[in-house]
Amino acid sequence: MNADFAWMHRLIPEGIVVLTALAVLAVDLLGARKSPRLTGLLASLGCVAAGAWLTRPQDYGTSAMLALTPLTQLLKLVLLALTVFTVMISLHIKFTRHVGEYFALLLLAAVGLMLLVSSENLLMIFVALELLSLSLYVMTAFNKESLASAEAALKYFLFGGMAAAFTLFGISLIYGITGEIQLGPVAQKLAGAHEPILYVALVMTLTGFAFKLAAAPFHFWAPDTYQGAPTPIAAFIASASKVGSFFVLGRILLAGFAFQHGNAAFHAMAPGWLPIVAVLAVVSMVLGNVAALVQSSVKRLLAYSAIAHAGYALLALTANEGRALPALLFYVITYGCAVLGAFAVVNVVESSAGRDHLTDFAGFARRSPLLSFCMLVFVLSLAGIPPLSGFFGKFYIFTAAAAGAPNLGLLWLVIVAIAASAVSLYYYLQVLKQIYAGEARSRPEAALPPFSAQLAIVVLAAIVIALGCAPDLLLGRITDAIQLSTF
Image 1 (cartoon, rainbow, N blue to C red):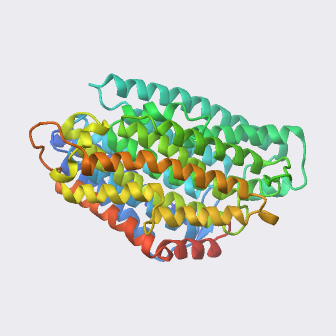
Image 2 (image 1 turned 180 degrees about the vertical axis):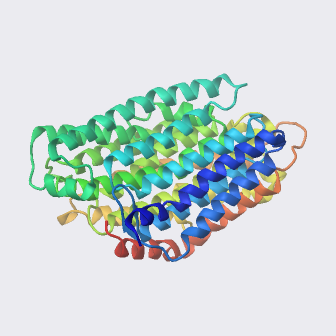
Image 3 (image 1 turned 90 degrees about the vertical axis):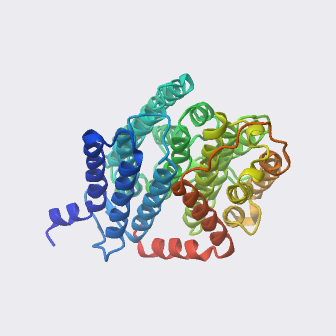
């Protein structure tokens, strides 16, 4: 196949999603503005069509900027699935009349994520990351009737712009040192290099990604953004955005900085990215879980929980061996499913109560037993309780990290993570206490959400249970895809 055609052929799924975004805008312009069902259905069909194309036999390979491998193929399917679930919980939109623009921006954010996981070029990584970020900034401010939404978007934009500056500065330094922007050649040029400017580039790049991932102490935007943004958008930021961003960070560190890992083992610290990642992980786990203890807003609670989970995910990278990437991807994918489902249930409660306080969940089990059970599944998975997927995700990360250094040198990190997980049980159980034991204040019974939202919640709960009982359904595919990919 001609090289230029092969490059374009590998972009067909992204092209399908872009064309769908344009079609959604056209349908909205022609009169579907007041009914999100048609535009939402069209957006979902576009994602399904792109996913169907990805399941065909593929012409794997690497072009100048993008790579299509079994691993990127799997991740694109996951991202498209999370996007469809986000569309499904958004079909009863009440926060805006501009439905077409909303779904178009959501699809463009998905395109940014698909390009992000395919990128092996530092410049393309930055461009894809900004396409994702700009779409999310606008969607965060979509609720024009809420000052909190505008404030959240402003904070997200300002901190995101700062993160972009750090990332671009780090990339420019890497290019200045190596003269390369492809991850493979960058790693070869950096082998054995120990210039001080290299560590500056490493710190700048990690700082930029720490902002994007809401890892402490670069998390300041996350609580306000999660609380102020429309709930489906907060769900997308917490799930799909995290999957793509953590993967590309793992690719940069494990492939681009493969020879500058250093050592984070107790009594054996050595300069490199491992000590930085270890510190970010510890601070995120401790601060996120402690701050979540005093939250009365469930969305804000989930925001601080997301900060803590960013710490757990970073812990996987400290393994720095063959188990690091499988552990990271399994964890962020299962976390994405659980947190998306949790936000979907919050969206149901918020739609009827007008708020997302803990007390608004009181008696929810009597109003909606099925959705309450699903919330039970999501919350216990986030807490790491067996036999749900969150337990196995944490177990695999902890064992990979413990074996990541000789003589259990990273055991101190695992101990901190286990202690932080124990702390998280308190605030997760507070949510369940309100749902199952709280006394509801008198208010008219709220109508159940549309069938699409209920179906999305139930399917996500089933996925969380299935991946906990049979983790190899996903972990085996991830491991096989990594072995078949040039990473």
